[in-house]
Image (cartoon, rainbow, N blue to C red; front, top):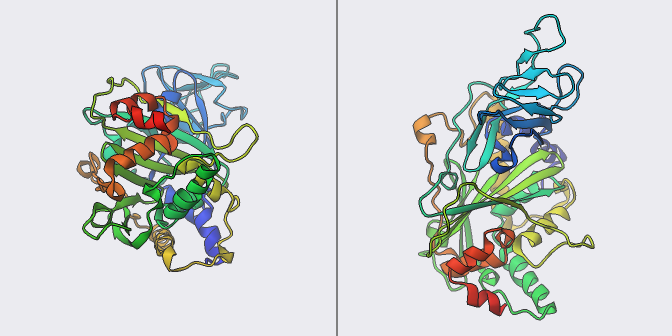
Length: 412
């Protein structure tokens, strides 16, 4: 249970809020690269309305949405090699937000500018930094760095509730055997389908430990021991808003980006290494993961649909003052303590956990993750392709074929 004050402290992300100030110490995804072309795109991040654009020579800019002239949206604008031009009266802004041209004015007013944020592209995503100077390094976490012989895709969904509900799930191992085991199998039984066994395994032991980029989550499931990868290695929650999953042939970042207090951008960033090679990619495809059917009901026959439904049903901002936490919730308690501790670090003028200042360190950061997931490496890959968001990937059929799962998929 949290006090009302701490619940507010952890969930509000706008400018000047404690959590908003913590988040602004990190580089954040603001757009998927293949969605930002010749036209600027509207985005909202941490309660601020932004426009992301690409100059004619390929550079990325992120500026506040409203033109300084008559306050129309710069999304109704166009780009040239120097920046973004408002479609209304042609005012041109550079990547730093400073006005470069005011066509109908007798002289350029160099004092005019719009708020602008640094931006970089990495691994098919556009990142921005919205915090104070000096700007930290953009950490190149392993899956974001192109690796020979791999294919990537990016799934996304817009969620109409607070970001913390999604992230707390990342340190809640026991939900797997119930939501993705017992509940999933009950749903499958109603449809005449066979049981899913991998995610129904009971947990014998769970553990959590802090590391330099967040929290390592560990488990021992029935039939397993502490010698298994799931306990010896585990997998990381990368503070403040990312989870890494992996198995033999699959690595995934689940990224939960606060749009504002009651909306969240969820991404599944997948890296696949198939036994039979996939065609070489020139771009990383993106796709939308559907959450509700045509009647407005939750789609509950896949893992992420189950997760998102229960997060949403907690309310737009979960009321944690009415919770009854137990011993199985120790990961959630640890994560909340870390959030509150890191808010205090920022308030005292320090760098929170995981902020990288050394450019050499930032070049490649490996995040150790178990390979033999839940004691069945290939079973986990099959589960990811058929019962997780990746089933909606444009690469799905090719991946199933190249992993050798065609016969198993046809039998379902």
